[in-house]
Image (cartoon, rainbow, N blue to C red; front, side, top):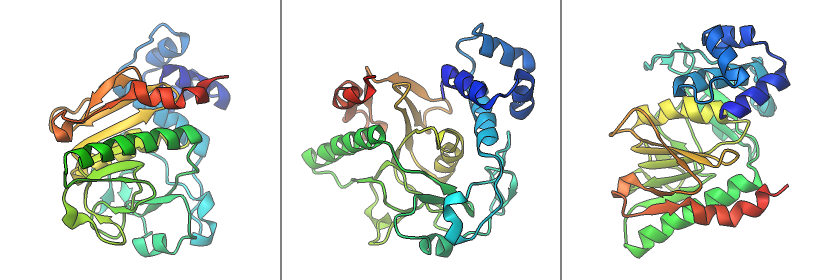
Length: 280
């Protein structure tokens, strides 16, 4: 969510500035300035904290259910700080959940679910804009590989990625590239992709910009793009270069760092393909 979306969501949920400050850990004075419009460009960490608080409020903690009730599953309350250890979920500073890849494989066919640190996440159905953007990015990546006779392989969801090589996490990135073919099996990819793109929708904002960001970084993904269709923006992390993202718009041509900029994705062209979807 950008600032305007945060204000809109706060209003929809009927949360006071004081409550939002309490949930997010952001000082009340800062919250008031952001909500009044006095501060139009808050710090990135402040945006993350406010967004996490709003997502938590909207989704309320739900009791765990069986696999048969998978559509109602959601993860526990996000925490402001986390630490990654083999026995503790960095996402929630609590023990790793009890769900495994066996439970994941037992889900009904076509279920839009991901497994992270032993917890199920309901992904929801992608929007048409989401699918169009993802398809265009995949096509451009594939074209580059074919033109240069490269060995990297671009994938598009739904493709399973057992990113930690354990039995507690299985992801389905929207678009990703694997350059080490030894990681690719007939059933899934085992290990971290080199490049990942996730396309944000209202139901997965927190998951993509906080939980998956940390998960991909820790697992060894080299480059991570987060596409915000509503805001017409792209957040690009190249983990070897910086902890902070580069921010692009749909007017930009974005270089793919894993290929040293020899490939770039022109979002002006992509937007031309989906612009009709933005018309009122």
